[in-house]
Length: 321
Image (cartoon, rainbow, N blue to C red; front, side, top):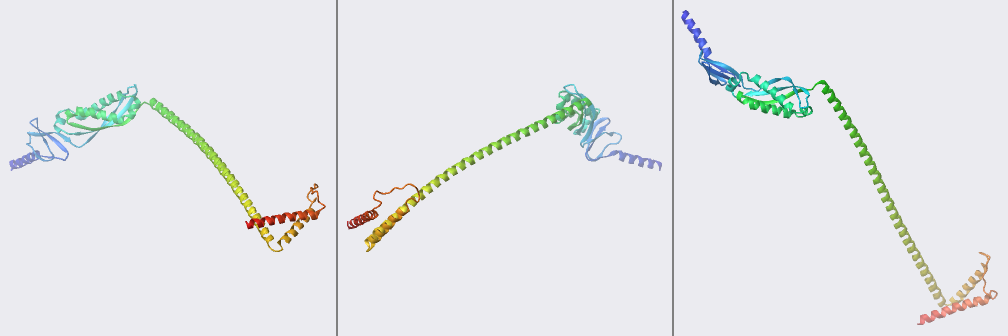
């Protein structure tokens, strides 16, 4: 009975030792009698108890590694405290087990030495500007060396770049001076643009004013010219109308002379006007111009009537012709 119990216990232990369950994204290194035998993949695996053993267990997921901070010296002999974080992944579990005694320490130390080398080639100002370049240089150096360790370095990121306090104070002063310089330049540029805009506005205003004056002068000249033309045309039209009216009056008088009693009416009208003209003498001035025979009023009237008759006779001859 005791033998059966002991056998059952031994069988249970044997079965327990013979079964190995590997989780997803993991890899177990199997050694048989101290020698590498194989890599157990995720799932249920059967091994030989007391002959085979699981020597290493690796996580195949991406692993972040905090790289300790260190003091680096730049090309211009400035101390700089730098720390970062490294991301890597195991790609070959066998090499990760036997390629290095401790691949984590190896990667961390290599990252530090590579970082010191890269920063030592740069000046202080460039280290703040070229973070991406530093990260790429560290990743390239680590990836080349980590091939033999079965590790793939994915990326490296610098977390902090801390210069000494004196350098920080000087950098702050430099930044303040640079900002003040930019502010002064911006102010002067603004004033310059303002003066240019004012000058341009004054010039355009002067040009517009001169053009307006020129246009006004042209319009005024055209208006005066048109007014003169209109006046001349009006005077010519007035003279033409007066001439037409005078001619029409003369024609009417000539026509009236041809009628019975017309000559007597003209004689009477001439006599009245002659007498009236003598009545107006010396009313508008002190100077008098009198004909030699002023006393012979009847003779003057007869002379005027003779002229009228002569005009009538000439009119008849013209009509006959």
